[in-house]
Amino acid sequence: MVALVPALASGIVPVFAFGVAMLAGMAIYERVF
Image (cartoon, rainbow, N blue to C red; front, side, top):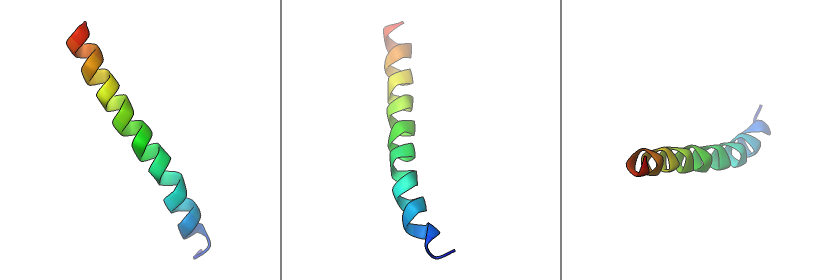
């Protein structure tokens, strides 16, 4: 279970970054269209 912590941490950072980028993209998309 402890071995999963680094994998989970390294796995959640790209997902979080992708979510932020997606929200920013949607905001820009709504502003343009």
